[in-house]
Image 1 (cartoon, rainbow, N blue to C red):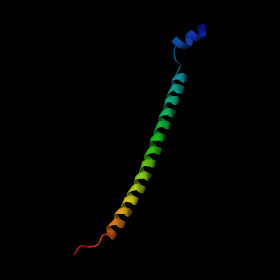
Image 2 (spheres, rainbow, N blue to C red):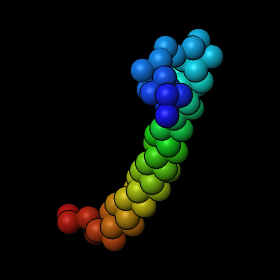
Image 3 (cartoon, rainbow, N blue to C red):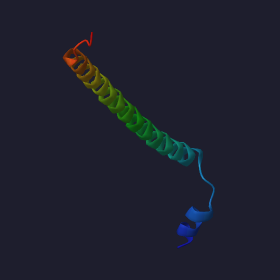
Image 4 (tube, one colour):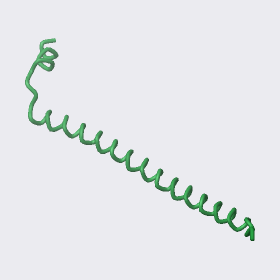
Length: 68
């Protein structure tokens, strides 16, 4: 029981501090990688969307007959 109290109120060692910082850095890295994956998916999505819309506009434009 006394050891539990010491853990709660005791000083944190440099090793514990480094371990806590490492855990935070790993979590930040995972979050950043998730952001990169999301951004890459958005780029792919928008490239396909632009391609589809350009194709549609070209197809519709070729259907129109000149009104002279």
